Image 1 (cartoon, rainbow, N blue to C red):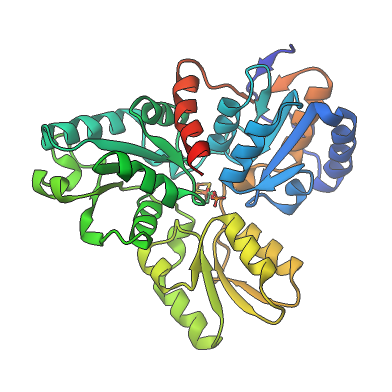
Image 2: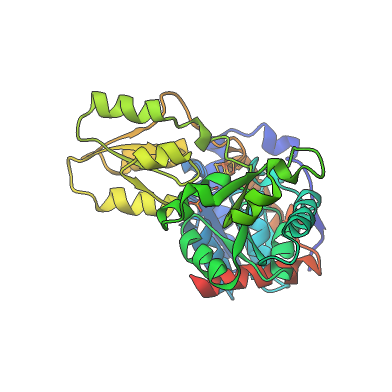
Length: 369
Ligand code: 13P
Ligand code: SF4
């Protein structure tokens, strides 16, 4: 197999215009044929996602990666945790490439292994011999956190299957430690009928020994311990945006991603994953109006695809995931042309034993959903 390396974009590609890059991507993609599969998350820009063989939300793309047996290489147009999950779910000889290694996720960075291990130990001490805790990680997390979850009997979830995963967890243990997104955890649990006063927030920035800002009593009462993490894109959607749209456009429907705050999700008409948002608006009758609380590339694409509907971002101005946006035509062209030259650059390879432990947690998710 060719060499593997992590590099930054060479000057020749850096100075290339997008217009010049695009026909070359199409050519390289055609020549690579079935040896290559390109996966694209819904937040990718149009110039990139047009080359994806499969598009989807995090869950759909994990399934695509797990199901693909043919391609030698998967180029993942998305962010780091997605490419890691694809690597864990594919065969060892299949290579997963992230065109720009700097395409991370700020939410995933809000929980690291040392913090979660400390929280786990503190919670166990505080609960004594009390009921067990099940760790559940949102897929937006590093592979070593998924491995931690796998090792402790828990599962991964995404925005499209958080409810069945939480139900599964609570049917096995009395409590969940849910990280890193407090909003997805709270919104999903509340929609399942779990009262807010049975959820507490664990703040990893509190000093060691302070139970993340909780008391032993509040931890004992809680059914869900929510990690204090959030998405910087989705936290920008506020209740006043919902109110203002409803005032200006009576009858407009508000649809948001569950990474938005509890208040926003409560006020919205509908909430769900990126695929849910796309499917709902696509199926809606002509003439309907939508204010959408998620990343701007998806909203703009929906608006262009459905000129018969009024579709607007819920927030005035641009609500963009800057790390998703790092995957540009120049990076995509570069990794494809390197592949043609027999070089694998920017390969995502999760080492053992992390990969097999993380796979336990991912496989549990795939079995539950
Ligand atoms: P989806 O799983 O809904 O595509 O969401 C991924 C994500 O990162 C949203 O911010
Ligand atoms: Fe991460 Fe938020 Fe970007 Fe999704 S939108 S990849 S959660 S930073």
